[in-house]
Length: 110
Image (cartoon, rainbow, N blue to C red; front, side, top):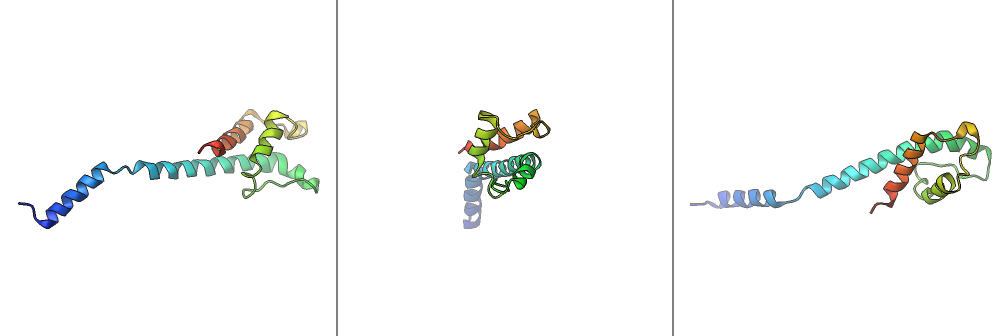
């Protein structure tokens, strides 16, 4: 015969068995990955773009706080028109381009 305590434990075991805990973990992983991609992209923007933007007073300085808002503009200037960054010494390596693309693509996922 099942006692109330045993009945309760069975209910807990059954609920635990059929509960999907992966969605929370997946979203946490996605957030962590997105933040990592953002930090990698910021390093590229900070080392290849910000020093020149600082010299020109009317240019936007990229920060971790504003870069997501500016992602479409960055994508257009860097990959569509290829106008940025200016100068041969500032040219992005294939790895740096990949980091920027990965970050931009991560923002476009739901």
